[in-house]
Image (tube, rainbow, N blue to C red; front, side, top):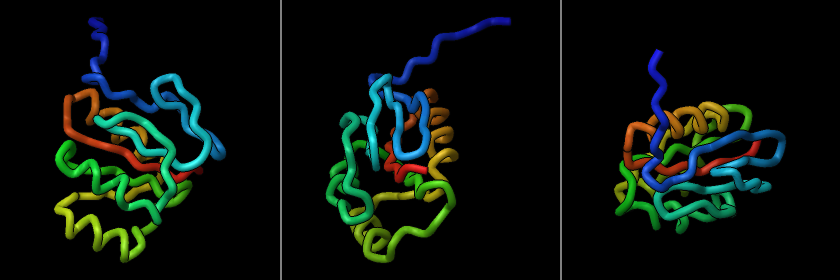
Length: 117
């Protein structure tokens, strides 16, 4: 069996998550978080669309983890992202973490915005 080291192209993968927190690139962050090519930081949640729109020149898609269960984006958020020309895929936060890590390891231009489980 051949093992290859994964290169995340300078972005930090999601190492783990639990009730109210995420571990991204070895750093523990409580509450909602956004990560991608511009780094990792706390996020204000769906009221903070500016943080998502700031990624528009750097990513092709933003994965939005909506917590323990999948939910639709609020209409105002979906409209803002569409007007900015950003593609967003919503899913439960655990699935969003896994999808982000896989596509990040493939060198894809992705970002991740997460609401804790």
